[in-house]
Image 1 (cartoon, rainbow over the protein chains, first blue to last red):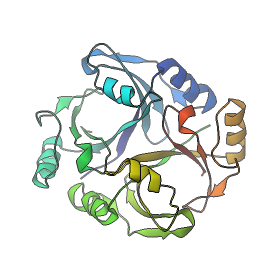
Image 2: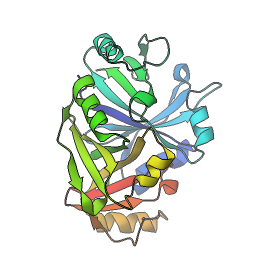
Image 3: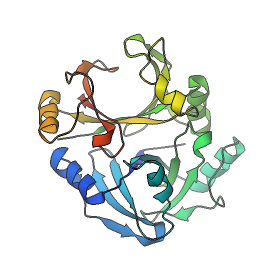
Length: 134
Length: 134
């Protein structure tokens, strides 16, 4: 069912410093900061040859990563995203297996303009898992 | 400098259950458990089309992930691994930029039989980063 690893998201306390580190110290291809007000984050995409790293920083009130950064002031790996072909079929298969889908269980349009769902970390070895319809 | 994302490692409290979940519920290609006594872990590789997930479980005394699981009993994303062409050149560039290399700073032979180094999470946005010479 799951396909490619679409991205690894890292919540960072200082987006400019983290982007500069990936560009200058780690020598990666770093895109400009992209505000995503609908998702409460500013994102910097790091393009690796086979996948992406997404640096996330809170934007506006009630950002979904504000609590994570309050608990992890240095930042941390926030979630991983797997691609699926059919997000509704994936959701139904996961729910049938007893996994909890966060929110109301309906896919939302994610930061890439595609339908996404998040799965409960307690059901996936403590890892927050995003599914994105590729 | 950094190339492909070689893998994402997830520490899990129950390796059989986690492997079964990735195989049966998430429908991924899951390899048999691989004991790595020299590294204090048993590893299950999940093969995705573009990268790997490594499920890690402690093996023997003094496992490097025992403390992580004690702190995160449900498990959690433990580290990410980037490939580099030349690990000594990468290390020297990182040290010159002020980043701390864990241990004695000399590459060790990792679970894939290739030279690896780990970088201090506090210097990389709270994320434990492994470098592997590809």
